[in-house]
Amino acid sequence: MIGKVGFIGLGTMGRHMAANLMKAGFQVVAYDTVPEAVQNVVTNGATHAKSVEEVGKLSDVVILMLPNTPDVQSVIYGAGGLQEHPPAQRLIIDMSTISPVAVRQISADLAGKQIAFIDAPVSGGPVGALNACLTIMAGGDSAAFEQARPVLLAMGTTVTHVGPSSAGQTLKLCNQLICGINIQAICEALALARASGIDLKLLREVLMAGSAGSWMLEKLGPSMIDGDTQAGFRIDLMLKDLRLVQELAFELAVPLPATSLVTTQYLDARVHNEGANGNQALFTVYDRMSNQASP
Ligand code: NAD
Image 1 (cartoon, helix red, strand yellow):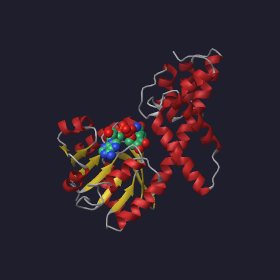
Image 2 (tube, helix red, strand yellow):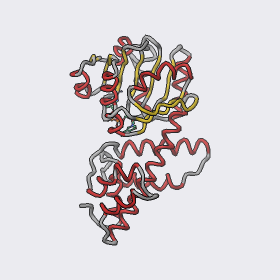
Image 3 (cartoon, protein in one colour):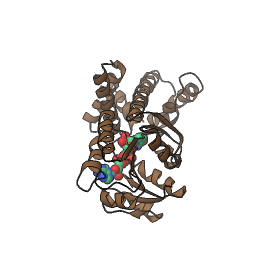
Image 4 (cartoon, protein in one colour):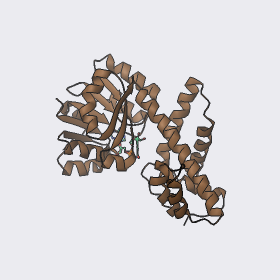
């Protein structure tokens, strides 16, 4: 039985996921390098650990929800890291989106220390995290996945074991390239419709009812049309994911021309200091290209 869940990385996603673990009856031991990030969950009853080591010592299993591959490597391999201080049930669940190549290495290294490592990245954004309805795609050993399942079910509605170590990350990267290219397609349609004098809100409503309807058009379309650049999923994180997609594509020699093009456009946003905007703000790149401004 898992009682205490360590949670490292209480950012945009992690704080909601940890809150849902508590709602489901798990005790949470929270740690973030930014102490204010844990404030909410601590107010609601979580234990505030002061280090990664303390998380390992106080928990049955540990969940990671960190920005990037080096962050995950640092909490595992760094001084006072989880490889030296594993949780009681010797299971680490990484829900961040990171490199599949790195995941295989981490998993093999930890297996040598009798610690199981599951890659379980998520889709559904901050709203999915808030409402405990994330899609969770898990890679790793079947027995470890079964051990993790009750914890994962507290945060997501679709929880699937998709294959061996790193298979979860590979699926997540496929998810991300579809999201990026879908956002790009919506930007192009909005740019064309705007130049034609079409009411963009009406366009979205009509297209949602037909074959061009999508999650992105439904959830992000309104902020694209309103010029709301506020971040849910940052452009910098999208670029991190597109880079991971390209690295895997290089390794496997799979050409991904559409991914390459949309990566260039997100890089254009970063060059213009827009990396902290939400990924729907790719439309700003189209504002520039078409010399038009969002409202
Ligand atoms: P975030 O930057 O908002 O949160 C990450 C948190 O980790 C921050 O609070 C940061 O202080 C903390 N952190 C960084 N390094 C740390 C360390 N070494 N030790 C402890 N804490 C550390 O990121 P996010 O948006 O919550 O995303 C987290 C992961 O989930 C990323 O890999 C992202 O790609 C993925 N993801 C995000 C979304 C989204 O919509 N935001 C959706 C799906 C997946």
